[in-house]
Amino acid sequence: MSLQTLKVLEAFLENPTDQLSGAEVHQRCKLASGTLYPILLRLEAAGWFVSRWEAINPSSAGRPRRRLYRLTPTGLKRASDVFASFNRGVLA
Amino acid sequence: MTSERKVEWMDRAAGCLVHYAARRTPEPLSQRLEEEWLADLAERRPGFARLRLGIGCYWATYSIAREQRVAAVAPARTHLAPASVAGFMSENSALFSRRTATFLLVASLHAAVLLGLAVGVGSKFIKSAPPQFVVDQIDKTLPPPIDLPVPPTPDWNTTQIIVPQPDDKLTFEPDPPSVVGDVKETPPETQGGTGPSLPPAVTVNRVQGGPGIGFPSAHDFYPPAAIRRGEQGIATVSACVDARGRLTSDPTIVQSSGSQRLDQGALTLAIAGSGHYLATTENGKPVNSCYAFRIRFDLKN
Image (cartoon, rainbow over all chains, first blue to last red; front, side, top):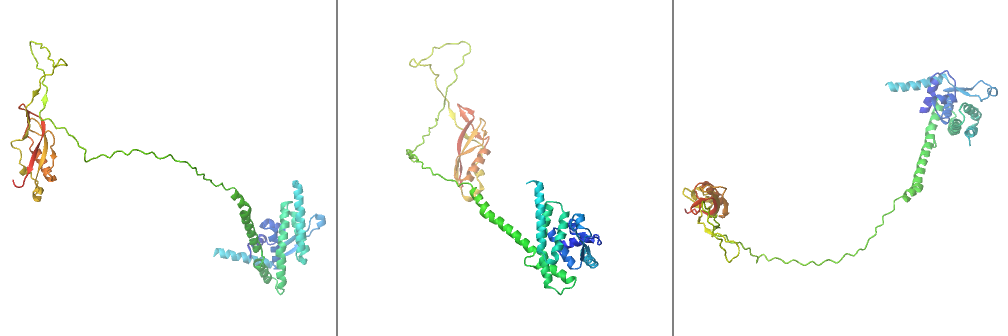
């Protein structure tokens, strides 16, 4: 697991119930879009994330809909295990 | 071009890049990613930030397309683990992964810089090199050598040193006699009518002194080392003596006996004889004087 993937997971683990768009994850992780979006798609395909469209009307809002990502219970457990293993390694 | 037009141009370029990148992705994701990226583009600040997003999306299409191909090769995957493993492996093990592409990019940049140094900049350095020094040899004729006369070689064998012989008799001019009472003028004597007349010369009877009564014997000062070696000889010693027969200075060897030990014994003897010298007399009156005398060291005696 790459460092960039860990940064994305860390951004979601700050508040696991939050739904973040790609722009918000970029603001938290400071990752380039060329790195960020493949990671989001990869974790979604692996079942760690689920995504949905923002519930707005683009014509009335005057902007495109955002794609919101959220940790799944499985993704939350796996991500927690990954960081817990790092912590054990550090504490050991 | 004004700054506003630059920003507008970058925004349009970013939109085009997002549209073009989204169409390069596989069909199920094409529309979704285009809308998602456009929403992200709308939240970015106009200008360079949006242009950077567009470039990033174009770069992301390569990774996404590659992972989709890997996913198609592994159809019998489960929901979680196999897909993640395939994705991570594809990121790190593909022939032209991001690491490989980055490495190739950096290597090509280095090669370009080296090529530029070797071709372009290097020639400037060579041109700016300092010119070589040109050495001119000046042909200068030297003046002919001067023939100096050779000095005559002195003949040391035929050179004679003439030493004047000392006078045995010393003559003194006596003081004019003092007359008390009547002064009697005498007419000056002239010799041949030229110059004043000189008083008559007075002869001084000088008797040179020497070792006197009680002077130590040479036998008493014979150096033992010279006796063991059988050394014999005659040393001539010069001594300066006052009117009472005492040395006024240290005696010196005038003529060596040929043995340093005998010479030293002669000097010791001369010093020991102080007070036993006979003073030199002038007209019977002892005076200070220096004279030489001989000391014989003879083993037979």
